[in-house]
Each structure stands twice: as structure tokens, then as C-alpha cells.
Image 1 (cartoon, one colour):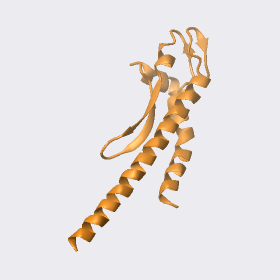
Image 2 (cartoon, one colour):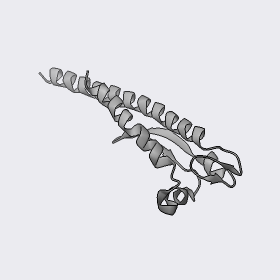
Image 3 (tube, helix red, strand yellow):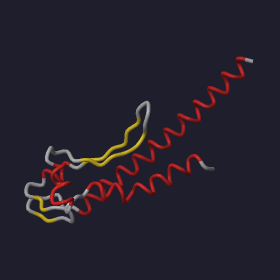
Image 4 (cartoon, helix red, strand yellow):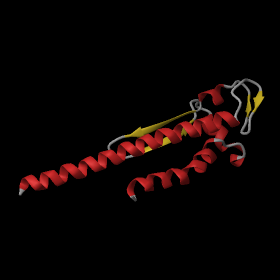
Length: 121
């Protein structure tokens, strides 16, 4: 009887890990799409205007990055600034020129829909 219980536990763990791997793969896709979206809207050259802010040095625009993550408790993706003053670019002037949050929000709903498809078959 213990053998059957162990088989069930092993199968549940396998399903769980497979789904986590699928979510991680989807997260990698969304991280790449979000970064590409940013790069298409914000020129990455000094003294150029993009959809979000005026690039004085291009360091902020060139420093934006994205990635997916998977740890013991969570799986997901992010889009972030690589410069310490990125938070000021996002929050200044009542978020008038924010870039990252609107892009993440643009993809969040579709991301969740794609995740639900893994669980509802």
C-alpha cells in the first residue's frame, strides 16, 4: 500500500514540476517581448527622444533589462532599470514619463491567460 502512495506522490511532484517549467518558459517569452517593446519605443542613443523620456546619456535606456525567474516559491518575469536613478525616471512628475510599469501591465493579462491554459485542458 505504501508503494501506491509513493507512486501518487511522485506523479503529483512530476506534474507540479512540469507546470513550473512550462510557466518558466512562458515567463522567458514575456520577458523578451517586454524588453523588445521597450527598445522599440525608446531610442537607445544619447540626446534622442523616445516615447518615454529624453535620453541625455542613453545609460538609462541601455540599462533596461528583463528576465524570468524560478525559485522554490514562485515563477515569473520582470522588466527593470539597470541604473540607480531609474526609479526617478519612473516616478517623476506623477509618473508622466514612466515606461516599465505600463509595458508590464500591457502583458500581464495575456500572461495570466497563458498560465491558466496550462492548468485548464
